[in-house]
Amino acid sequence: MKMLVSVRDAGEALLAAEAGADFIDLKEPANGALGALALPDVAHIVSVLRGRQPGLRISATVGDLSLQQADEILRRVERVAACGVDYVKVGLWPEPSEPGLASTLVDALAACAARIVPVFVADQGIDLALVEHALASGAFPALMVDTADKRRGSLLQRVPLATLAAFVATVRARGAMAGLAGSLRAEDSDALRGLAPDFAGFRGAVTRGGRADALDPRLVRLLRRRLAAGAGAPLAAAA
Ligand SMILES: O=C[C@H](O)COP(=O)(O)O
Image (cartoon, rainbow, N blue to C red):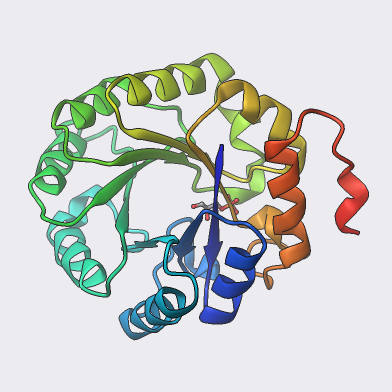
């Protein structure tokens, strides 16, 4: 299982890469689950990483935007992609009062030239029909799950494991990568290995004082070991 780590600047990006992150995800964690960085900052981090860690895959987000802001999302997709990232992450926030909006946005994203990773915001569960709809386009290299409310615990406690397993199986069956995130902790490693997504994403778990705090590379290394190893890799190793 690969590891995605969210970072807010070039210093954190290099620390995360050196500590074993496979995907470097550019975002401002203080601005929400998919908080966006300023475009010049995204371009700067990309150029630093390409110079020092050329093989690394880099994603960046368009920000926490609702489904009603589809035009703004599409504009930002183009601008973020132009910064040179490999993937642009776009959140799909549930909108029960307007059920067609999400699939309309998915269709518009599928038509974009950029490599987009739709992120299913799963605080109220996962719409597996929408997942299937996104996969049917064949346009997305990866699909992710994440949570918006970071105070309410790990994704693995908030969404039934059977639903997460169905998400992973459905995505992988169509040849895309499946990613899981949402306040995941080192303690979730065993369950994550059982679910076997292509990658798991972290921010809060690689900080000491909450996801807006600075990244601690020792925690990235700990997670790297816990995700790779069987049960029993010592939790205290990063202390
Ligand atoms: O993309 C992944 C997220 O940044 C994960 O953040 P989190 O671990 O604080 O939920």
